[in-house]
Image (cartoon, rainbow, N blue to C red):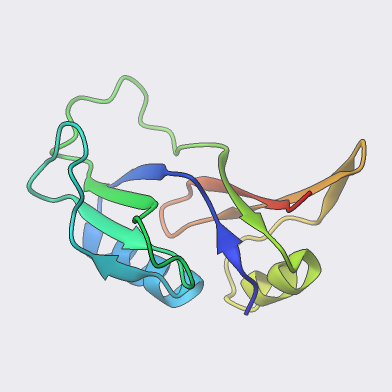
Length: 127
């Protein structure tokens, strides 16, 4: 599988259990204890991507606990970087979800995928 990395991304979900399963199945994340993040909620779930032994980088929250949303549309442009970019595109496409074609803008390659609730995640080729 491709090696993915990100600094820190956060998503609010209507179905937190389904979202957790999606991240674990698709990205092979592992659930880890919550670090001391700001404003923790009872539903918070911390995940880390494979091969990253240090800090968790993905926070999942129950949308009902996250407070009133001004806009209920899915989150856009959370970025994950990838070393084996073309392999990642093929792999993520095999999950049957929505995976957009690879785009090349001024030498920077990326594509978008949508998670189980339609949030857009941008997969970028490592420079």
